[in-house]
Every structure is written in C-alpha cells, then in structure tokens.
Amino acid sequence: MISSIRKILKRSFDRINNEKIKYNFLQAIPFWVASLIAGLMAVSYSRAFAFLESQTFIIFHNHGWVIFILSPVCFIIAWWLVVKYAPYARTSGIPQVMAAVEFATTNYDKKIKKLLSLKVFFVKMASGLLMILGGGAVGKEGPTIQMSGIIFRKINEWLPKWWPPVSRSNMITAGAAAGLAAAFNTPLGGVVFVIEELTKTHLSYFKTALFTAVIIAGLTAQAILGPYLYLGFPNVTGVSNSFFFPLIIVAIVAGLLGAYMSKIILILFKWKKSFKFRYQHLIYVFACAILTASIAFFIDPSILGSGKEIMLTTLFSSDKYVHWYTSLFRILGPILSFSTGASAGIFAPSLGAGASVGSFMASLFHASSSNANLLILCGMVGLLTGVTRTPFTSAILVLEMTDRNSVIFYLMIAGLVASIVALSVDKHSLYDHLKVQSIYDLTREKEDETINKPDIVTQSE
Image 1 (cartoon, rainbow, N blue to C red):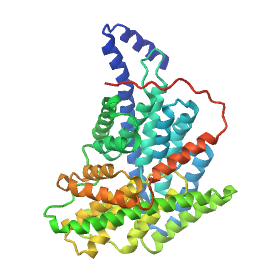
Image 2: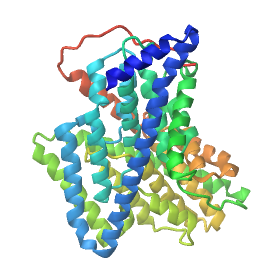
Image 3: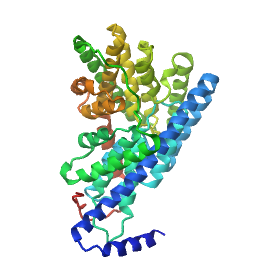
C-alpha cells in the first residue's frame, strides 16, 4: 500500500517542471502530514486523559476507599510497562526529545530510535493514562510532546530515497512544538518553547516548517474541540498598581518552590540508582501510590490529578483561597508521581501547584478577587519557570490559556523574577538534568553503531 502511494507520488511530482517549486513542495509535505496526525493524536490523548481524570474523581467522591486499590494498581502497572517494554518512555518525554534533537545532528540512528520509537509511543500513552486514572499528579503535555516527536520522526523515516532530504532534527523539533500547541491550544507557546528550550539551530533554517507544524496541528485540534481556552477568562479587571510588591513576592516564592521541587525529584532519582533489585523499585512505587491515596483520603483530595481542577476553582469560583497545606500537597503530588519513573508530564502539575501558591499568598495579602487572580496566574508562571527555566514560554502559555492580554507584562515579570531566583538553587532545569541522564544512559549501552554522514540541514522555506 505504502509502496503504491510512493510510486503514484513520484510519477505526479516528476511532471512538475519547476525544480525549485517541486523541491520546496516536497520538503513541506512531510511536515503537513505529520502535523495533521500529531493534531489528531493530541486531541485523542487529551480526551482520554480528561475522561480518565474525571472518572478518578467520580470514583473517589462516591467510594473514597477504592483509591487505596486503584492508585497502587495503576502506578505499578504504569511503571512496569515502562521498565519492561520501553525504558525511554519514562517521566516527562521532553528530556528524551531534547536528547533526540542532539543525537539527530550526528545521525545516531539506533539511539534516536530508542528515544522515539513506536514502542515508546504506545507505552508512553498507556503509562500516562494509567497514572492519571490512579490519581497521579501528572500532566499530558510532556507525553504529548514526545509522542508528537515520534510521529514526525517516523514520517521522516518513511520518506522514499528519491525524496529531497529533510532535516531530521528539524522534524523532531517541529514535532515537539506541534505537540505542545495541540495539547494546550497554545500555538505561540509551542513556538517559544522550541526557541527557548529545544533548538540550538538558527531559527531561519526552519521557521516556516516550525510555524506550519504548529498551525496545522493547532487547527486540527480546534477543528475537533473548537477554539477553546484551556482555562477560560479569569477576571483581572481593576488590578491595582500597588499590588506590584505582592506579585514579586509570589514570583520569588513560586520560583524557589519550583526549583526545589525539581531538586527533590533529582535527589530521589539519584537515591533510586542505589537500588540493586527490582523489587526495591516496586516497593518505592507502591509507597508513592499509598502515600498519595492516604493524603487524598485523610487530608486533602486536591493532591490527585493534573491540577487543572484547582486552577479552575481558584480562578473562577468564590473559593479563592486555599489552605497552606494544599500548596504543599500540590508540590508533593508531582514529586511522588514523577519519581516513580512512569510516564508523567510535569507542566500541568507545576501550573496547578503554582496556582495554589498564588492563591495562598493572595489570602495573606487580603487580595481582592481580581488581584487574587493576578497572583494566581503569576504563581503559575513562577513555579513552572522554576521547574523548566523557560520564563517566556511559561508566561506565553498562561497568557494563551486565559487570553488575558492586559496582564502580559505582569506575567513576564513573574517569569523573569522566578528564573533569577531559581538559579540560586540550581543553574540547570529539571529537563536539562534528565536530558543529560538520557544521553549518558544511551552512550553507556554497548552497541555496534555506524555513524553516518552528518545530518543535512535544509531550509524548509
């Protein structure tokens, strides 16, 4: 079937006389096809993720004790799938994409396939859905980014030999941007994320391909879900200019908490490396699940899930202020879920934790409703920046999730302040550390691999 399609395409394109038009058109097609598939994938995964998350809360509210069975079973199966079938499907997925982009420039075929294979795709999806069903504090964005990168890499791999060469690193990078754009309906966030976090290639080499991937994936998602906002339109009218000082304080606290949350996760990963037997990892995963379930059942159920519910509650209801321990548990939740090694995005949980920090700080400052919303949004930007060290991506993501253009400068200030204070904890982000670990793990593996010619960087203009 695929060979027949290739022959038909080849005969059709051979009839085009203008070589430059044919060359550029052929180069653009892989990005178009991959973006369309990535958009469909992101929508399907988002719907499944949201459905299972809602089912978890329904089960918990109706039969709370079930969480003590559901969480351990889901956590353990999610972890086992990764360990057994696809070790590089673990955790977020963004560090693996970052590592793949670096390997793509030197053409380490086997290493890239281990990071971005179809097996990783399906294990990533299954593990992430199991984690959210079990009440894990995980997000969908990291897995979506890795799965989108896999789609783009496979399309690039399936191109026939006569096809004009398309840069593999550009395909993977564009896939990551398309995945983030489709996951949150944040096209600008996807572009800025690539510029700030992923790419070391000059943007002029692939800006058209990047924008095209984001646009097609985003439009595909919107065609199915509609032009939705991930959060909605919080009221930030009448924000007081005198509230600048509380904003700085929230950004500092959120940035430090995000950095320390990352630090604790890394310490736990380092400690787990001392485990000599697999049953020790199994006990750890079981303990994380039981602790999550116990906190949810006995103290505060807000530890469960991606954190979207707490963002919506604090931004759009009269229940503006959370308890101090809610912030603590919203930070502890991602630590427990992420450190299991199962598939677990950390974008949304970081935003949820930041919202709880901003909400609690707003109560200390006796903020009005609109001022409280501003502090909540700045807390979201600050804590995500503390984890990722991408202040502009964080600010743009929150802006696009809420469509609150009037506070863009406040959000950017919060991101910059959080980024500066996070440097006092660690000069590198969580993703940087995990990317280095992925590269180290791959280079340690003994394999007979031939290094091909350097990857061709082409202008997809």
